[in-house]
Amino acid sequence: SQQGEEDPQALSIQEGENATMNCSYKTSINNLQWYRQNSGRGLVHLILIRSNEREKHSGRLRVTLDTSKKSSSLLITASRAADTASYFCATALSSGSARQLTFGSGTQLTVLP
Amino acid sequence: NAGVMQNPRHLVRRRGQEARLRCSPMKGHSHVYWYRQLPEEGLKFMVYLQKENIIDESGMPKERFSAEFPKEGPSILRIQQVVRGDSAAYFCASSPGTGLVDGYTFGSGTRLTVV
Image (cartoon, rainbow over all chains, first blue to last red; front, top):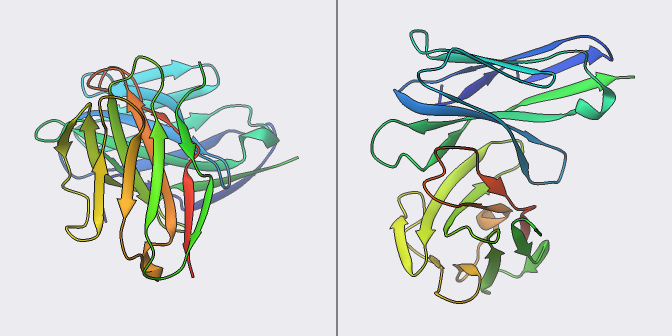
């Protein structure tokens, strides 16, 4: 799989439930970022977690990072219909072109009212 | 603050024509990045520019594609002699510095369709 691969590819839940998306990557990273994209729109930055951090919160979002397993998870609590979107993780490498982000293919989240 | 502005939002070109995509970064941002997104896929890095300099173009095809970020005016991504495979959404992002402190700010993209 490519750097920054999300799992599952698609997720459908009821409003009020929690949604968990996972991301795996292959190389050492400087940071990992999660973005959201509504259909036909641009990306919105959600949260950035650095390689020396293990967990970060922002509102209803909780991100974890396990550098030993090269994986991250995004948890959205108490989901709403408006959370329906594609969610992408993106990694910034720890060497070389550190400013270049490598995106996964995304998780399509559908929250049913 | 108007954010990252891209235009046009949609662009239709016939095969062989040229496509010019424009990106105005957020006020105060001097770093610009271009990404391409094919349907149902994630974004793929193309090029990273600072004012008047191309810093990293490792993701950009060697032929037909070029990018610039002049001292004055927007960044331009230029695709010459477009082919159907160039049809995609092209996103621009900007950051004030290295962009490693916080996430990037993306524009709404230009959707290029080659007919």
